[in-house]
Image (tube, rainbow, N blue to C red; front, side):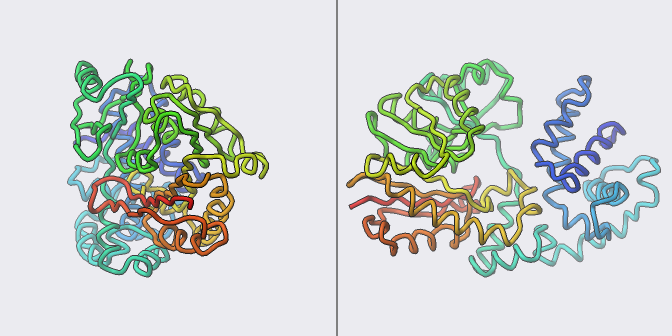
Length: 403
């Protein structure tokens, strides 16, 4: 592979934004790809993939490059030299890459790869937490799986098309996909492509959604005609899935504390042809109290650490702080107690997170069942979708029925 100066400089700028200016990785990459209209798909692919790879393996590359900080461009260039050397890429005669110790890089890689927290590139405190909650063997397995590159997966919108029809339509645009019988509405891209530019996306025939995430809405056991609340709806990925499962019949109340996300949900719902979704901003507790005892199904896709989705959001492990975990667990407990009151007798609730930590999952449900409102529920089913077993994102889901 030949390195092109303008592409490599773009990578360095992107890393600087992510590590030093607090950009989210996907936002930084999105901005970079608009820099030069002359770049083709190969150029854009190089930038995106290299940035994500270097974010994913940040600690490993820093240790090998023997840099203590990412705050200088010189440090980022040294890390880039490590990335290129480990891939057998010939380094050009640029001043930023002068005196790169190729042999030393390879030797340090062999040595440092024997230490899990460096090999898997994870902060000390997060590695310790994973071992504490999951055990050494299980955590090592999950951590390795979470460092694999995420596949691009789409969910067919059955309000507008079928899996077979969508697969054939995408193939006409040279986008190849495969199916998985365990995920009836999922298509997995065989190689990365810009699916957002397709006519099928513009017409709402599909949405991007990981296969594990696609199991949450069906787990709620909704039926057409029900009154359903998606209490932490965000931009509406699962609400849109619920609308399809309910065949646009009944009512879905999509709620969130962030009004801007609900605006995005409205836009997506219109494109998807999902007409039974109503958005409600949780401005105060009244929005919840009005629905006490009136809901057939409740989905709580709770805010969480996001540790189950590190393969697609690798920058999260560098932005996450231990203090946040303690705070978010209190928030999860509070949401469970307050929102559960919306469920009618014989109604059901699903609590889900994109985390694999028991402290955010099983322990939250156990604690909830011991509260006054929790005692009116019984646990029907729960499981954790582990990345090492599914190959997809990590999720937890629990379904409870109100007595």
